[in-house]
Length: 313
Ligand code: AHR
Image (cartoon, rainbow, N blue to C red; front, side, top):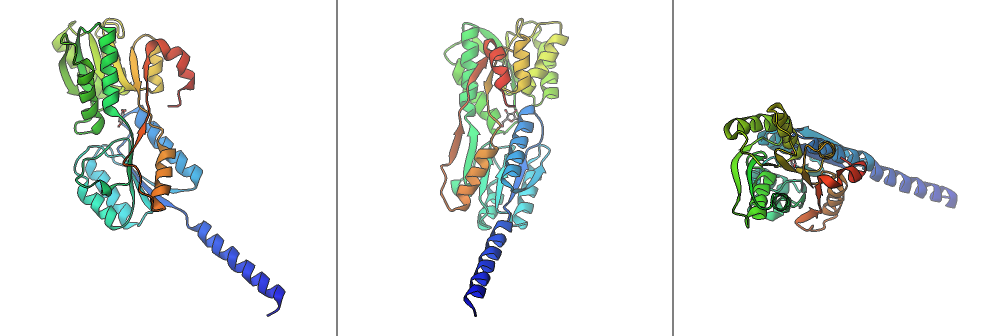
């Protein structure tokens, strides 16, 4: 074979190999809890848009708040032999068998936003989330300061069994523990959504009358529902009843500017870039740190006007 022909064939071979490599797109399955809050919609958007930017083929599944749907989606991703899985687990327990199946199939699972309770941590690559205990504690500390350690509090809890509901409750109790005159007089789930938050607050107002000084809502959406209930009861949210919540979504900042919400603790849902970076590392065979923690801060209403334009969700 002539030298020129040899070079051309070698070049063609290199080109076809690299095209084949480029053509093998990465496939990632993402099982999302649902769309119960503005926060969750922002998280979904962050993961979808990052996948798009990176050219990842994202298989998205909305579980409508049901663990059984998430387990079905996980099994379907495993059967499709996806490269990796992103799981936002609705509750903490009940994941071990399906995570074992993913491990057996050598598919790394990256947990986003909520953790799971398993006997073997090697069943997932890493957890990317905020510190929910810290968030609850900061909310409690803020309220203790604002009320001089004296308040009858009603609590709107998140989804039963969910890590943020369990941990925020625990953290809040820690935040107020040095104040014996701060009492949680009623506590019930509002399932992290606005409609349930409103309904539960209506019931609290009915049973407690005007004897409520403050609301601790495990997320902003429930706080916004509570605001509506308080207004409909002829009271002034943010003044007659103080309200502290968690997430830091834009509508919470608007409510703070309107004087109806007093404080929110940030919990960033913008987890897409970190999730895909973690997948990259896991697929390269790296052992990841078990918790990639998000740093969050408290936003009392005095800061709302200055901060609202820089909020990204
Ligand atoms: O897991 C994070 C929590 O879930 C957010 O605080 C809440 O808004 C969401 O639904």
